[in-house]
Length: 158
Image (cartoon, rainbow, N blue to C red):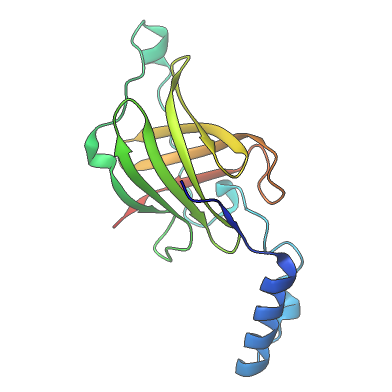
């Protein structure tokens, strides 16, 4: 697996400052939090879709999603944040790219009737495979720019 790519805030800010100077826009309106991952609830177009817990309560167990989920997924039509599902077998191998924040690889597996994942960027959580989307929720994080509770809802498919 590749190591995560983390963009240092000073480098990104310098690049945006140069770009702003060239095209004549004021980057001071971006604010200081532009590198922080935003919870999906704050993102435009977020649709909260939860897996039904009634199936779990009735004795059925979670299974791995079908092979139809393999491919590229995006949080919206701008395609800034993307999830690439590489393989679905007894584990799910994926790559997560969050705009201006990181590129990381991860592996998910079923534990305690949930699909849980770990990444090489030191955060973990759950994946929910819905009819037309994949919801990723961060449960624990040692990564500076991604906090527990952060969610991404990947609804656009390539």
